[in-house]
Length: 170
Length: 104
Image 1 (cartoon, rainbow over the protein chains, first blue to last red):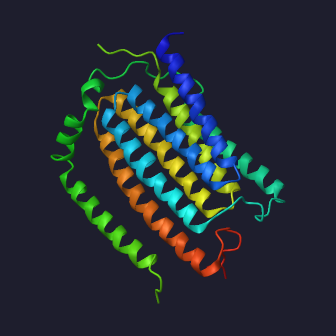
Image 2: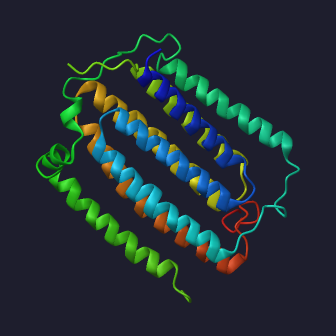
Image 3: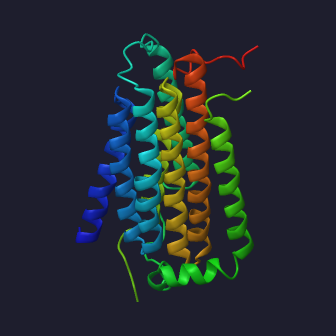
């Protein structure tokens, strides 16, 4: 087993572990911190795939901006542990986890991942494809119109958030 | 040439496992903010499979799509958290079992 594969398994196990810890912790702030670790693991995965731009954006936008927003809202609402939330519905939870594993099995079979005859080599273009320069070139030529439309989406979201979170809205 | 030893289906399997954990979280948790975080986890797992396909096919469109998904996710997170704040102001709770004003 070579170094790269060992590193992949290390990061993959860490990502799965933090995701499971994220959905099982009572305290929402601890959940957010585990989710941030999970996002860093995914950024490492993007680096393994030579997608540097996406990896940096992942850390800046997801781990940096969005998760700080989540932490801010949790602390603003002053949510403690979920002790008063009902925990008696254990049968329901087991059914839910069973349903989720059925989904996993379906995905694995549907993609043919259990038979496992996937490609093992990255495309030769992969190394120069993920840099900021080449992503920017594609973004501002072929995908210029969608790029401009995202700015309208962000503006609409900004206006909507201000209206929703205003003190009195009628 | 750049040859790596990590096969494509390892990335896809990791992505589907993370997606399933997100589904399980959405189904089991009662705290609206944690349900929302599980949705972010599911978005990220799909991003991972998009980037993996993009790198293995040598086509940058997958990475552009991930960029747009992140933009929309940022807008979605802001709007969703604003809705949660408005709900908390009216009902004093974020437990999704107690929020049933849309139920008939």
